[in-house]
Image (cartoon, rainbow, N blue to C red; front, side, top):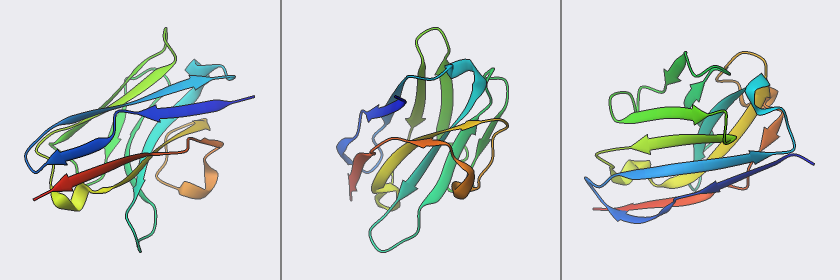
Amino acid sequence: QVQLVESGGGLVQAGDSLRLSCAASGLVFREYAMHWFRQSPGKEREFVASVSWSGGTTYYADSVKGRGTISRDNAKNMVFLQLNSLEPDDTAVYYCAARHGPTTQRISVMDYWGQGTQVTVSS
């Protein structure tokens, strides 16, 4: 059974930083591109960042480019999202997702999803 479990969310102030983690189990982790998406109340789920199976290729949404860093540790089956200079607009539930294949921003082709971790940024 595949599980993706996010952690690291919380209530922070604008300008703070957070490091989100996603622990994967039940899959051959190094075969999967890993992604972070987020969803704010009343909005559609949106792409945040992705990393290829090797960690060598990363992509970012314009909204986090320059403030976010996605990374992975294939030895520990973990993927991370470091977010700096947090803004109230970053408030959302952040989801980890895995896709067997190349990275993509398409939500519909993700193979597995985590349950999400709430990030709330106060102004």
